[in-house]
Every structure is written in structure tokens, then in C-alpha cells.
Length: 119
Image (tube, rainbow, N blue to C red; front, top):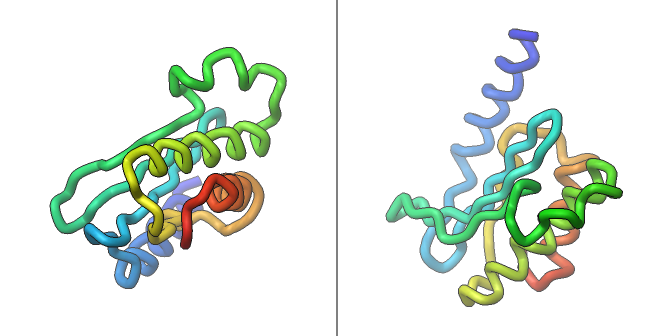
């Protein structure tokens, strides 16, 4: 298990060299655990989190019981897109955080795009 974590951490550092969020285009960072998925929109120049959503969010309570993990990721992507829309954030930079762009990460990104985010 240690070698897998080292590999993701290495990819994460390699990605973060080129992916930086600023005031015009903040960075949307995604983290997934075995049960949950989290997304947050960060302005790296000030170090502030502008928006966040996860599968544990109050807005999604009770709606995720019948969904699988990919369906949950889609719901979180839609929620983060709606939150960003209310805060007038239209363009972001996507940070997949070292994860492969596949499955839950791709589902979250596609749902965020459908909700109106551009990246």
C-alpha cells in the first residue's frame, strides 16, 4: 500500500507544478476516499477556499442512499457547480490531485461542467 500512496503523491506534486489557481480561475481540487468524495475551489494567491462540497454535505443528505459511488460523485459535481454559480465563479482549473481521470473523478468533472463550470 505504501508504494501506491507514494505514486499518487508523486503524481500530485508533478501536477501541482503547472496547475495553480488564481482570482480569475481558481483551482478545483478533488479528494476521494473509499467511501466519500470531496471537492473544493481554492484561490491559491490568497490561500482561501471559495467553495466546497462533498458526499457528506447537508444538501445531499438522504439523496445519496440509493446511488453508487459514481452516482454520488455526479451529485457532488452538480452541487459544487451550483455553489460556484451562486458565488459567480464560472471558470476554474481542475486539479485531479494525482488520481487517474477515470470513474468517480471523471463523473464529478463532467457533472460540474454540466452545471456550468468551464475548465
